[in-house]
Image (cartoon, rainbow, N blue to C red; front, top):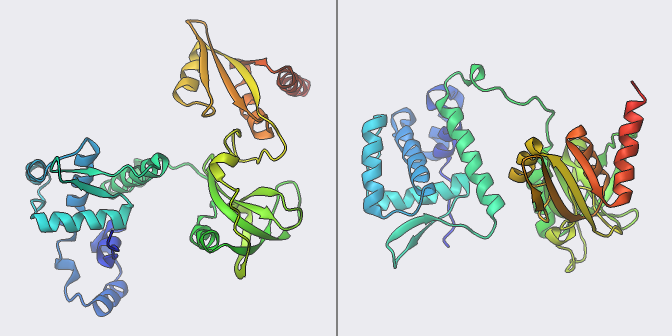
Length: 338
């Protein structure tokens, strides 16, 4: 596939209202990119047309004729210039890939355009989710009174690009790391293998130089990142999906072996667990008006035990006995505090 180049003005207008971009930035863009009259460009038409194309193709493949018909209807409803030529539509598809990472492919046999599912459904879904959120925020003028954001500390995502570079080029990274249970920071030198998200936090999965153990480091607790030029040997045997196959969350299993776990939920809580499985291995083994039982096969790590405790008395652990005892003891110790 040909390399897709960014269109800076299109990217800027996607995240900001073009009428509210500071004069200094507009002057810089005029000089740098040769645009003499940015405010008069049909940027809003382009962005609105791109949004309409994505919405249409998310509902299924479409021919160019079907797409033109849909854009004509949206043009009447939204009062934007959306009807386009085949050449412009092709350029729009390139912009969609550049802006959102969403690839649109043409099927010559069916003469249809469709969003490509590239074998990474989680990545595809996240791209489309980001599109929905970004589009909603652009449309919601003064959205602070309509949208209530979750209050949380920065996630360290400013280091994602640097970490990806280190992973791709297989070079060591150095950083200062702050554990929650230790007051002082420690300096780490690690070989980064992958990035992982868990419960709205990002982690770098790496081999720690101190003990050669594979560990996870939260990006929100990482500072003074240094991408070194020192390479590390290729780890042919490491695969993040395989490594975490039997894990609930972010804690590396290392020497732990997976166990059969059977959980019983009341019928109400069971509906949520069925709609949002705890693990890929989850199987419903009993489902009636009073109870939902599920079976899992995974390593019993600390974060998995904490997740089970969060269900309170909506959950009863049935197997294995070691986990039954762990959860029972935790609930009893909590009870003694009252």
